[in-house]
Image (cartoon, rainbow, N blue to C red):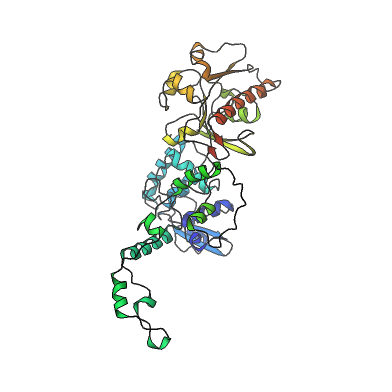
Length: 428
């Protein structure tokens, strides 16, 4: 059941509509009453209406949302447009933004924001329900936290008076004893101490989620005590309650592919190969594939009960520094220009931190530039393409070898059920 705050929040309504597969309705009126008020073109719409059972909520598309990756709230129109283009490649998405911004001045007006690659990935993951939290989305309870912090700060500064039982303001007929005037003077001169909220937070709400993630990492690694655990306190502290309610997001490992046209594995054919052990040449498949793919795989030594969700990309254009500890494999053809935008442009240093993989043809020796990369790069070979997938049973063996290399690198790098166990690189 949605809370009242979620019912009034446009971002929560959109996420709820996606979860229930209920398409919102674009309208030209804040109070649509007929089909004449509805449109299908986002450039002409001024409002968006959500309908859940008997509940109807309509929001202005220019409404700022809680999604603020650059401390500037993104409008509901930009959010909805990003969701509509969630499967579009980066160039197609940018072109679509430009076309809509050209149409908007003659339609509903305004403009949509072009979200960066990482921002769009975070937003789509949260809207689809794959992630429960996002560093770019302000929590709904932020206003309540701010009010509590301001109240605590006022008490700490002495701006708020003492309780009525202390200030002697009780009426004579209520049975309470009148306070001593001299005692009241002492009370008024006291400096009131604040609670933990005012001391830790001040007058503005502060996001401690990053520190909670660090604390959770250490708490998970602590051994269980030998003595029996005492009964839970009937009134747990706010910090304990917060840690229990908010779960850290499971980090997704990243696999980098070679952008070279000579690579046997590219975005168009890598997923069926690594998922099903079925190799098809990249030029024999759809070349309009996405620039970001997801792939699920169970790695027994990391988590034997849940599959890990891998991200596959062939470009580091929109990489953040925090993404590099999540890289678990780099596919290469040995061409050094591939590494110019990487964290370690020098191949020797790069493959001392990350496992490298080269895929070549059976019966052919790896190129000299691949052999020069050293032991940090695993070289595997697939049978040459004969026009069909028949008889390609060796592909599965090659794929298992590749996954074994990735799993071993992740295990040595300290990967656990929820991500890397330490803030270092994935070592070899």
